[in-house]
Length: 321
Ligand SMILES: [Zn+2]
Image (cartoon, rainbow, N blue to C red; front, side, top):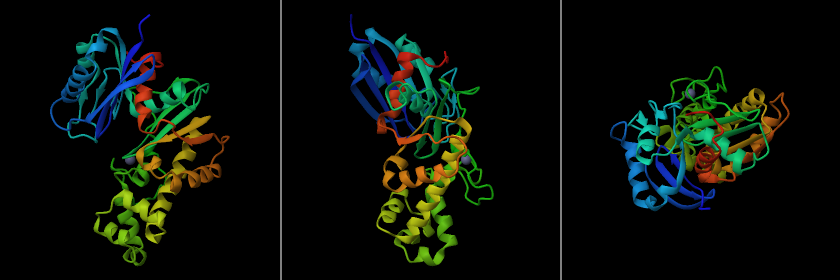
């Protein structure tokens, strides 16, 4: 018997990764910048050219391909529709890849891939109720309830980043709404949150280098976390808001889905677990009616979407073709 060959693809807002799996173990990978411009085929064409260059000898034995991608998604057609994260907007994945490879290609939202990764290869093995939350540029979620991957009509169920965590909030989200979890914790929105907090607390902000940069609207999330770590009072105010919003968000997730496991990934969270993890877990415990689930950082770090895409290709846990 030859080895079982699959490809896993992670289409991110900045990077696209392709990994070759032999008997479900990644043995070779390539990373490149996701094309930002071009037409509906530009992303698929870039993926195909890297497959052609790096993985061609393996293609005759290829069984199938799993793709985890930024959304929103038309999951049945495998098309990304009007993504706010790339200027190219809408682009095809499933059809051009299947035409080139002649093998089945399964496409799913990246946070859904995270939940699938945990179920098949991670801390969710043997569990039927799992939520994966990514706190990255934005905040997203993937949900498995009673062993079923929840998708919704287009594959975009559980847009948990847009849970309202503060109903009378003046903090605006990238989607245009106010008081959403992502407005507080999404990396793209943290500078706007910091500016808002600086304007409400000018004496504290003016006494802080990062606070002054926040007032100018030029501060980056990384500076805020670094100076909070160093004890800067203004930065601690900002991190405190991120924590409080995240407690409300995670508590809503527990109350709505009753998970056994919440796995957390995404660069904003994973790079700052020392500031975020314990306060969030402690706060969630005080805000829930359902029994507290296990809450822990994903063991897969930056590879969580790749592992989910692989499990999607190998086990086909959802009917999307
Ligand atoms: Zn929103």
